[in-house]
Length: 373
Image 1 (cartoon, one colour):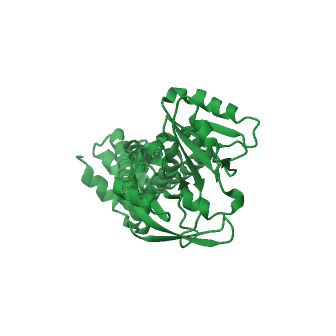
Image 2 (image 1 turned 30 degrees about the vertical axis):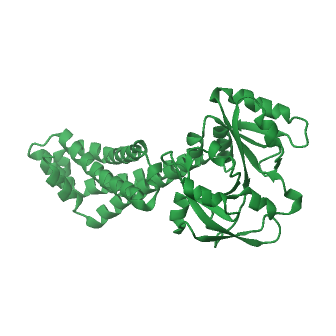
């Protein structure tokens, strides 16, 4: 830090240019954190999926239903500890942009299978005793400012004519896993089944079952699908992580898209910063020549230029990451490793952008430089 004053003096020579360059790094790093959160959101379900859970869907596709009567036969398979079922509700709260997952749940078995989602016993009791009751994740409740006792209207056109269903928010659940899903909205199967068209009564969307031993997953899955083979409704059973991964893939190759966008952004940043450093060095040709004339080495000149580029990258990178952490993005999805990678990439881009101008300044001959001046 011996020459820090000299480095910062040169950086602030052109304040507008410094602000714009630092801003470029800040925007790039904020975009990096945003893309990391998006990627993490898609992969989070797979990472947190229970190793001891299986998901059973209709072999024809997730949008097709399964008979509720399958439940008893599934429970008879050795190794199955508990079974619950879900339906997709698909209501709209106030505006279509207010999307959140809404599931019709089996209140008798939900907590035995989805053990990481915790609801206080007193709230759960109120929910069970209230046909129009609902449970919301803590994150969802925070998003809309809901509290226990609120009345939540949801418009739904999936089950007949457009209708407004109203629910009493009786409970709020939390997830025991750090960064786990707290965005769901649950309502009761019996109330749902009473109010849907008779043609789809008694049908569920998918089963989720809990195993006694995760090692039995392959055997149990095969037994289920074999048991319903050649029936009117055949099944497809897979681990919860495989189900989550397959669901994410239906939306496209998110990881490739994120990698492509990130690469383009940082390559553009490299060009912009490299051009900025080249202009800065060219403006100071005479000063660099004077430094060499009074005894500073070629290596020092190279270090001097690189240090400027790295300081810009460091400041811009910290600002961008700070914006991502300052309540603008979900902090639990931004790991230390992700933040360190982002800052490391920023410093690498900074070093690369200052390398060519720095090498040019290092090779500068004093006589030639002073002649230009």
